[in-house]
Amino acid sequence: MCQGKMPPSVRERYMKMKVQPEHPENIDALIENFDRALSHPDGNDLERLRKIIVR
Image (cartoon, rainbow, N blue to C red; front, side, top):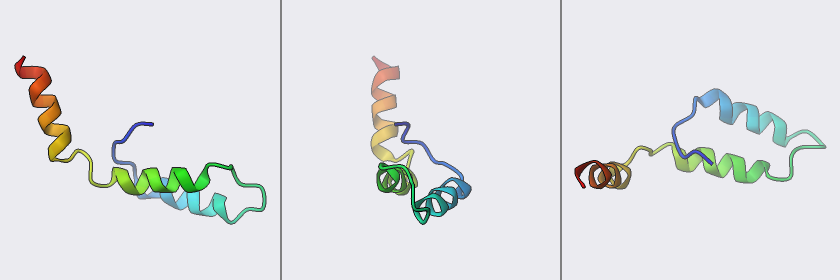
């Protein structure tokens, strides 16, 4: 999955889906991915990009 930032409305939509009786099996993974994406791009992302560009 893309690890870029997403708008807060995406997480809100996931949380609404989670309370439904028939929610996607991977809803917790989607929420976790959203939370991990909040810090991106981070220093590691930028360093990897710098290494690709400077070759």
